Amino acid sequence: MSAWKAAGISYLQYANICARAVRNSLKDETRTLALRRNQNNLKFNKWESGVQKEAQFVVPPKN
Image 1 (cartoon, rainbow, N blue to C red):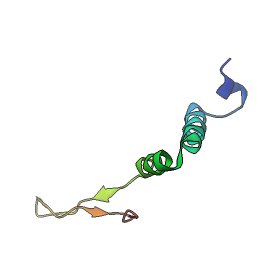
Image 2: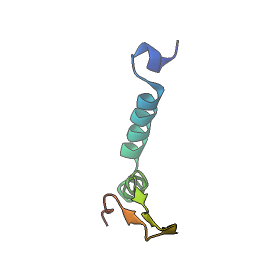
Image 3: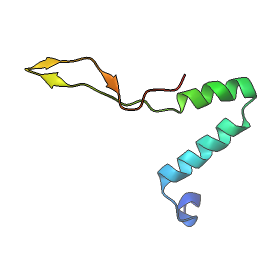
């Protein structure tokens, strides 16, 4: 039996735990870059009269 099944968690939860452990083990400079890649940015576009308008972020990314 898989370790994650025995622990009673889903494979996605297991993968997230592993990824977090790897990111936390990195040196400071590399960790900062890895944490930036971990962010999700969601955009949406409005359509009016068959024309796509400018894309906008649902939650603007932090810089």
